[in-house]
Image 1 (cartoon, helix red, strand yellow):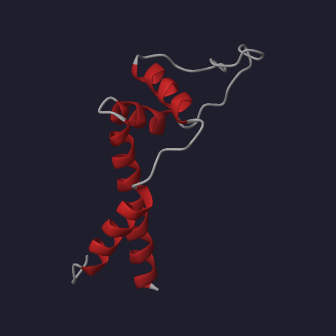
Image 2: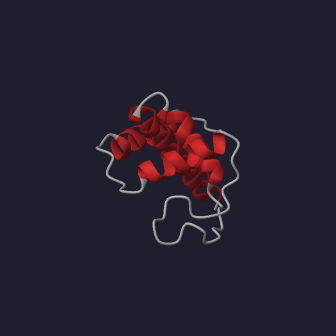
Length: 102
């Protein structure tokens, strides 16, 4: 796919630069607990963590991503950043590949 190693190296460098920072997403721990619920076999159908609307049905479409994050978090928050770096690097390589085709 790549004749020169420059695009993958640039994508990896950019992914490291974008993800080597403090985690500041206020919903991160909500996603991790939701992912743990999925990994334990629970199918999330209601808003589990709401004090005022716990019985409200929830359209839950991010279960796969949250399960991956929960697995990565078992290695610590550094594992979450590694997953984030891999996703950023893959997205940058995909953008490069699409731009190169055109």
